[in-house]
Amino acid sequence: MRLINCEAQFKALFERTKDAVFLLDLNGVHIAANKRASEIFGYEPEELERLTYKDLSLEIDASEQVMKRLLAGENIPKYRRLFRHKDGRIIPVEIDIEIVKNSKGAPIYLQSIVQDISERVAFEKHTAYNAKFQKMLMEIAIDFLRITPGHFDEALNQLLKSVGLFCQVDRTYYFRYDHVAKTTSNTHEWCAEGVTPEIENLQDIPFTLIETWVNAHFNGNTIYIPDVQNLEESTLKEILSSQGIKTLITIPVMNGDLCLGFVGFDAVNALKIWTDEERALLEMLSILIGNAEIRLDNDRKLSLALNQAEAANSAKSKFLANMSHEIRTPLNGILGMLNLLIKSGIDEHQKEYANKAEAYSKNLLNTLNDILDYAKMEKSAMKLEDEVFKLSQVFDEIEAIVYPSAHDKGLTFGIELDPRLPDTLMGDVSKFKQVLINLLGNSVKFTHAGSVNVEVTYESQQDLTVNLLIVVKDTGIGIDADHLNRIFEPFMQVEDSVNRRYGGTGLGLSIVKEIVELMHGHVIVKSTINLGSAFYITLPFQKVMTSLDETSQKQVSSLNHEILQTLKSLEISIRQQKPKDCKHLMEIIDGTTLHNGYKTQLDELKRYLKHFEFESAHEIVITLIDELE
Ligand code: ADP
Image 1 (cartoon, helix red, strand yellow):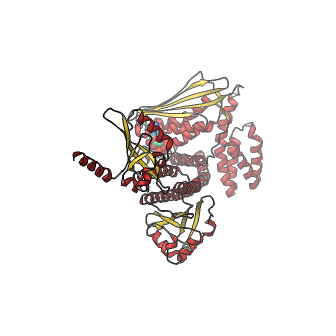
Image 2: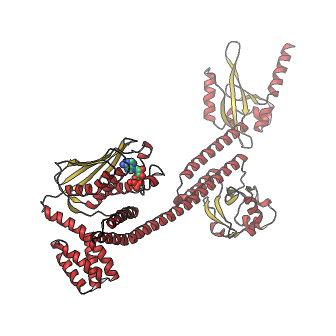
């Protein structure tokens, strides 16, 4: 009775379990199989009992190996196999097999529990597919972040291809909406092998032809047509069918509320089911494209604005240069006239006014020169000119210019020239002086007590060159650390109010830096607030071996200066054709010690003036001014 009960219980268990259960002899032939086994593999129970494991397994070799290991006494953990349904379908299964032994430990039969894991495997595949899809999108996103305007088309074509291949569709494409012309055009397309491209046929399609379609996109909605054949008869169905499309999905590409276009995926050869996850990923893709479109559009606008700004800036520089030039010419005339006025025997009182007017005019000229230099700098039009000069003479002139203003402020001013330095050098001396005057002008301007000093020595010397080191030091207001590294930028002034308190354009130091670097030198500044500043300049100059006649050099330079002022006033008088002034000027020219180099021209000039031949005289004056400047 107990035995009968036991067998009945076993039978009930055998049949109730939701997995297939097989009992096999030691050769792998089925002894028994439960009903579930019949259901899963599609065989009648009697049919199953005639089969061996080899008739179900698709991986016979691997299954044979398992049998061998079992018979050898090994325990086999659960494993996966591919089995075949009677109708040929492949069924992934998980097998839990063990050997049943008698009381003496000898194997009698095998017991195998086979679980149909089709759903689990499908789920795993699905998850792996989505993960791969996400990874691909990430990579595309990174590429799209780095995209530059010239590479958008290439990147978008690549994207359409990658997604098309991955999702196994037949055609992928991008359309742009033209909101002005109210049409849409296919701009990018990828087709699988053997699929006809449609891009040529899909240009300038009017919105009116596909109104519902366009409206859906404009509202930010995806259009998903699982089976085109199920669409009601319409123009849309006609258009899609004519391209052989079976399944279609298009996702709008938005910029806020504005629909820029759409990205679409056609299945031509077979229907395609798009899962919710895939659709979510495609939406991400459309966001990516949208972002790239917006960014590139911004880049385009930015570069347009930049070009316009550059054009405006260059026009401004040109205007600055022209204006400063225009103002400089009459200003030179004013200076010349003032010079004549001072020499014309006016009384002391008048002389004082004239001197002040001359000083203001010179200030104005300096500011104008700064602006002109800056404009030239911006247009990269500044050029260097080589000239032989005497270092000692340069510093004598600098002293003559700076000393009066330093003295007026009660500052001590000194220049220390290293005696080991060669005196005759070659380089752009006027730019060199401009650098020194700018720096010293600042030092005097920003120092209220103490001293302003210049030390001139060298950093290095070779046979043919010397690298001058010039240190301009003052005990002035100093520059705070925050401003120090921006001090060479154009228009940079430490305080906004500086302009009002100290005057200036904020251009001086940027011009200094530009000139020094143009001359292949460099400039640095060290400064402590309230203690003072020191500017260190190194500048290379060529040594001049031939010893020049010093006195003639000096004469030339002072004569040039004197005569230049005279000539400038003369030029204005000649233009206005005032014979009286000419006479007066001729006297001045006569009184000047003429340098041999200009004697002929000046004689000729006098001759023309004597006969009031203004045109020829004007020409000579202009040539002389050009040569002397
Ligand atoms: P500007 O003197 O015309 O204002 P600069 O370019 O020559 O223009 O100088 C820029 C600014 O740098 C000045 O306005 C001033 O704030 C600061 N600066 C220049 N030189 C000195 C100096 N020696 N001591 C203190 N501040 C200075």
